[in-house]
Amino acid sequence: MWNENSKPHPQIKGAKIIEGKVNFPISWLNQQGYCEYSIFLEYVEGISTADTPEMKKGQDIHQQLEEKFKEEAVPTTFNEMMELSQKEEILSRELWVVSPEHGIRGFIDEIWLTPDEFVIIDDKPGTTAYYSTINQVFGYCLAFKDTLQKEDNYGNDGRRIRAALRERGTDNIFWSAEFDQKAENQIKSLVDRMQELFNGSKSFLPTTNPRKCAKCRFRSYCEFK
Ligand code: SF4
Image (cartoon, rainbow, N blue to C red):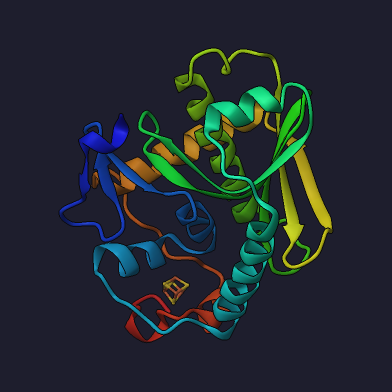
């Protein structure tokens, strides 16, 4: 099991070493799209800031959804879910996925498991499908696919994987796309870049968009603002 070979990264806060490889939270792919340098400040330099009102609101809505789901949820194992969903549609929240191979891990907000496909849903404020949020949900798809392939019998049953973004606190899916080979290649290439940032072979680039800096919680610590 991966967690038997897991330990905290000695220099990068929040990263781990799993099976000898740097493993980072998939949500960092979203932060990368906002500004790579903020990842450096937060996790390499270890600067912490207070949560923004938007972050607090997101956490509250997330908690409410989780509690509502738990009222009717039936605990089950990953393999039981896979088996049951070959016959009927089921829903899971906060599904843990990890890919030691690509060095990513995280909790999927919600997943619909149907006899034909898996729909990986990430809840977001607003209804704009940013490049960064698409990367994040593709990251969950990649880790989910790797998780499937680790489990006997279920990795190759032909079901498609679909990525979706939903307006937080609503049923409004405002973007979705199949996690096809092109999407997989795109996200693998970005994950590889992240690995290069962490091993020092590439530099964390600051955004060139002053509007992002104006709203950035690391602004007072940043030399590029
Ligand atoms: S102030 Fe601007 S350049 Fe600096 S971390 Fe924030 S977004 Fe990036």
